[in-house]
Amino acid sequence: MRGSPYIEIIGLAGSGKTTLRYQLINEASKVGHSYRYRQPLGSNFLKRIQIIIKSLRILFSDLSILKWITARPSGPYSKTPYAKKITKSLKFRVIIESVIVRNMLSEDPITLVNDEGIIGKAVVLSLLLEKDLRDLCTFLNILLPTDMQIFFVEIEVEKAISQMNNREVSLPFWDEMDEQLKEKLFDSCNARYLDLIQSLSSQNGLSYFVITNNGSVKELSASIIEHISN
Image 1 (cartoon, rainbow, N blue to C red):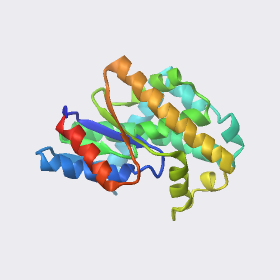
Image 2 (image 1 turned 180 degrees about the vertical axis):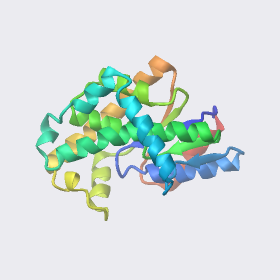
Image 3 (image 1 turned 180 degrees about the horizontal axis):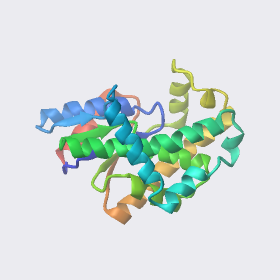
């Protein structure tokens, strides 16, 4: 597999992204590749201040960024309780995540694997704000590293929803959403993920892999080994 400084794993919540991250790092080490994962910032106060300052610079560096920040939730999901709160959170988290990733890449040349990264936040945000694919690509072209690979984990919507409904963490925006809207949101996310990575690939030559999660860890491992070997 061609070496890239940054690998982002995307897919629906409950699709197996974290499992894939662990397996990807473990399998890569077996063939002599050193991968690491995106770790929390910790309690480093100075680093946190630096992240905030750089994030503010991005906010005012491009008009298209400001358009995303000032946009309000609209469409079917906007009527869900906590829609404004989750949208506001995603707006700033996606920019902060971009800054953190860039910092980590500049500090350490070892390939970084991120399973809760920039794209996932941006895709959900684009649906809540009713932004189209072109707007999303423009937004991500500013935030994403130029050299990266994407692993898209495909899973049936019903399985992903079941995983989300059975989790132990409370997420009010999700919990209070109508069941039909949950299915619509996950269907829309899956479709947008695929359209996005194909668009980014044609525009920027970015490489991506689609891995289907059928519920078998063994099959998931086999798919990873195949991609690493190529």
